[in-house]
Image (cartoon, rainbow, N blue to C red; front, side):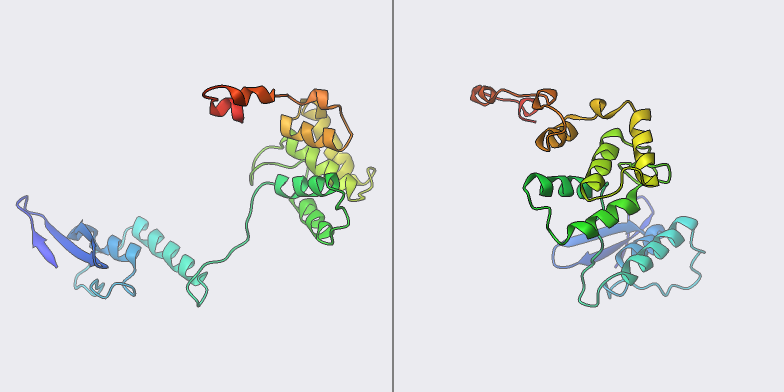
Length: 210
């Protein structure tokens, strides 16, 4: 439905479902159609005579929408690989060794994936395209060493060089130091300690807990 406002501008009113109403200027109608999808809303029609050429933004929105719909499962949902930084893999391996569960048959596959995440110069980063991260590299190196990778293998030598260049394992974060301590590589004295009595305070802050 198209209404004429007292400011002299036409607006299009679309009823979405039973409650929601979308009101947009008619000049933006093509954009709203691209975003919502005419196949889902029968009330919206893209067949308008003398329509102006689509802008670069509108074309990009249309292409993005088409790409997203192309990945949709016929049942209606989307499924994709859960991705994160390399510590998802390295910390899982380290934890399995801490729990004496190193015979888990999934670990070799996880180690393969961890090797694929290693950067060409030997380190591991925290996001695609990011710089090498000291703690991530320490955990990646140690996890692969536990999995039986030869310390003299080229990828392991490169990892050690990155660790030294970034200041050495002694400068990694507290989480990494905990894993190292739990596996007997360093003393627990190197890990920051929080006295349990802190929880008896009347109002412990988030900083105290974390």
